[in-house]
Amino acid sequence: GYYSEANVKDIERQRCEPLIPPERISHMQWRTTKAPKGRIPKNLSTKQRMIRKLHTKRGKELYKRRETSVEPIFGQIKWNRNLRQISFRGLANAKASWLFECAVHNLIKMYKAGIAWA
Image (tube, rainbow, N blue to C red; front, side, top):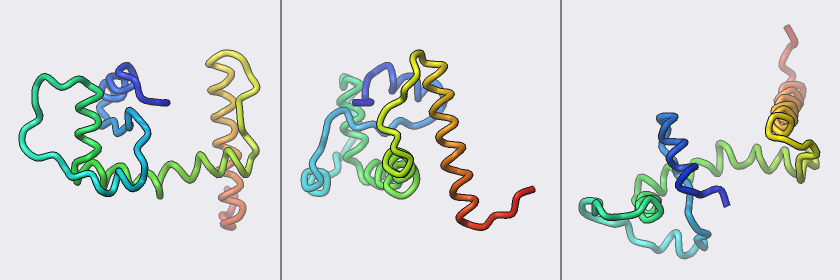
């Protein structure tokens, strides 16, 4: 999974609010869990804080936005462009490959939308 304390702290250093589930939660469990009330206990671990944050009303609303903003793009690139894995070794090469695939994805969207080329 994507969750780790290092990832959470890295995102916070970038002045963003991390919303990363530490463990898989079923849809039914997600919907039926009651939002926690009261102050956040100071002795909670990073993982426990994240679980608490995601179960609040605000946390659920923010996390749900991923369905319409970010997640579909990963699915489109993965399935439509047949990108199941990166074929290059090394972080720099993998990052360049990913950025290229994202650029191609955006160009295809612009072409299909009929956006004029400058």
